[in-house]
Each structure stands twice: as structure tokens, then as C-alpha cells.
Length: 174
Image 1 (cartoon, rainbow, N blue to C red):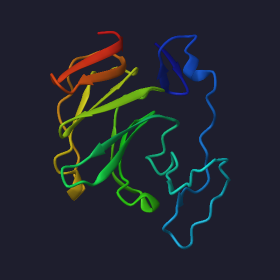
Image 2 (cartoon, helix red, strand yellow):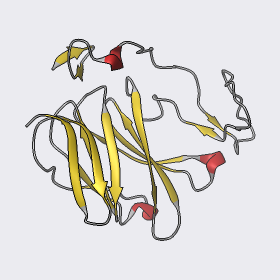
Image 3 (cartoon, helix red, strand yellow):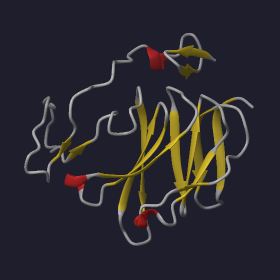
Image 4 (spheres, helix red, strand yellow):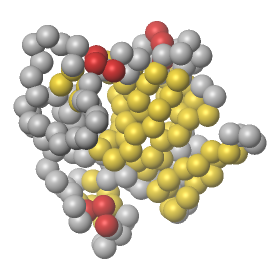
């Protein structure tokens, strides 16, 4: 692995660094905030922006790369966002007022992938450290608990067979 600006990348010709842009430094946007104004526009067709949290809002990460959804047993909805420095847990039940529940750090990497199974989330990165395991059973009360990490080495992605409950690492070492 190579290091670029303190972030571990997979290999010298890693395509993720080809289009890397500096993080936007302006304000985010919440449609339900009567004082909210978008700092920049977004081209869209039949899509209306409801909330936009910046990387600064998400713990000041250098980049973001993956987002996965989770619905708690109560029906509340969450976005799990992979950033260069960790995993952010954001409640999006009210799309116009996204609320950060927690941000849990992980190995620095341009790539972090997250999947959920039952009331757990699993995050992997090319920065190593194995599989981070998060207990989401109390997320509705604002609590995400990091459990012990499993395995070692780096992983590009993870897939879960929800019928068998097996988790599969894809692309990595260790």
C-alpha cells in the first residue's frame, strides 16, 4: 500500500486517486432549516436535494466514498457513510433534516465499505485493521457501539449473504 496525504491507497495506479478532488469547504444544507441556503447549485433532473452534510460535518474527513442504508426495527432510517477516517451514522428519517448520530474512527484510507446484517454494521477499508463491527441495536437512542474488530489486513469490499448470514471479504490481504 502507498500513502498519499496521510491516507492509505491500494496500489500506485489506484483509479480512486485519478479523480480525487479537494473536499468542499462551504456549508451543508438542510431543506427543513428556514435559514438554509445552498452555497453551490446541483444540476438535477426530477430530484430535489433534501439534506447535504459536508465532509467537515462528517468529522472533517479528507474524502468520502461509500454510503449504505439501515432501517431500525422501529422504522427509522439511517445512512451509514464511509469516509477516509471512519464511519458516520446519520439519521435520515426526516430527509430535510439529516442528523448525525455518531462518527466512529477507523484506519485512514481512500476506500471504506459498509454493509449491514440484522442489527449490526460491518465496515472494511484498504487501510487495514480487519472488519470493524458496530452494534446498531440502540441507534434510535443515539448509541452506536463499536465491538471488537474481526480478522486483520485490508479489504476493498464486503458482501453479506442475508439468507445464510455469511460475510465475504472481497479484494484485500491478510
